Amino acid sequence: MAPAVHQVLATLGYGDAIGHEVLGIQRALRGAGYHSEIFVQTADPRVEDLTQDYRDLPDASHADNILIHHFSIGSRASRVAYALPDRMALVYHNITPPEYFVDVNKELVQLCYRGRRELALYKSRCDLALGDSEYNRQELEAIGFPETGVLPVVPGFDHLSGPADYTHAGAFDDDWVNVLFVGRVIPNKRFEDVIRSFHAYKTWFNPRSRLLLVGAHSGFERYLTMLHQFIARIGATDVHLVGHVSNEELTAYYELADVFLCASEHEGFCVPLVESFHMGVPVMAYAASAVPATMDGAGVLYTDKSPLHVAALLNAIVDDPALRTAIVDGQYAALDRLEANDFGGTLLGFVDRMLATPRRPHPPVAFDFWDQVKQADELEEIKSYRPSAFLALPEKGNHEEHEGHEE
Image (cartoon, rainbow, N blue to C red; front, side):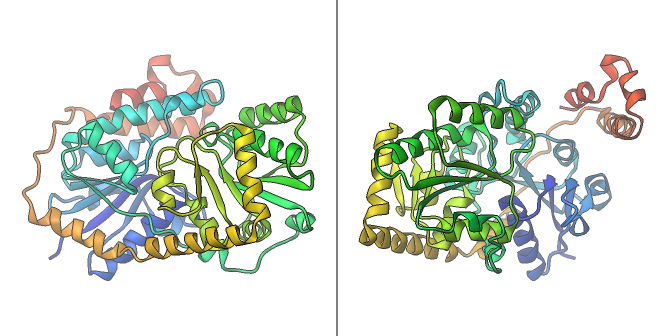
């Protein structure tokens, strides 16, 4: 009987890059005849029926199985996976450096710090560590993982293939220039730099222009407030923080965009860049972290964030139809190269490689690990259903403290 190849991750989202990759991996594995389930700690209600609870993973575990562990932040699911006897392949989706969230989201500072610290513990646990980009693979190598590789992101665009919803975006369907950025409203995306450069463009080159910033801000309301204060302080106008949108609304914003402007300083891949390629929107992006590799020689990379410099580049693209066409053609070619990657073949090659090589010794696990897991689950249940009782517990018995012990 062939070994099973299961996946485990903290949370399965709907329509995001990690979720798309997880489901793609499962399709490839099942297509090759492997039994393959997805074990999670939490899941978006729209995909929850595709998953199993991570607490059921020990029952599915076997020393001959392979466990593909998607690591993006520390979690109890990660720690359970660590303790099991299955061979492990780690897929690293990158963790944003915690310093970006100081004074913005204290909880995320702690989670990112713990996640980056916890990642290093897997050097002795994994038979293979894969980045979903070359940038992420290099980070794994720098940490000291002995066997690394790249399982490339092959983004899907089905979410942009339906009819566009112009209910709200229609207000921007005119002869003005629409500068677009799509991404969660978080500090490493450097929304303030996009706003600063757009303000220079509108002031010095084209008063008939607007900036459309599309992305959820849940959990980052403080950063959103800081952005509104920044907009008021510099006197920027026609800046629209649109918030979270549906796939149909996102399609409309891409269709309206004249140029996509990215100033992000930390990305593991940056899916909106290739979404823009797919939608025929010329891209300008700051050359940081994984962005140059994702762009793959297409679009326009810049290294000088001087607002007037970026504004001049924007103006050159907007004002020259031939240049726009050349940029978009180059982006289509880069997208063709990305989509030509044999995702399934690469994945199955890594699985075959693991099965053909001797497994690494399993690192020791604390003798009372499973007792701690059970206690943590009990505390989480009390916290969820009897919060007043949870708050009455001694501080050393609280959930967060216990999670720290599990590490």
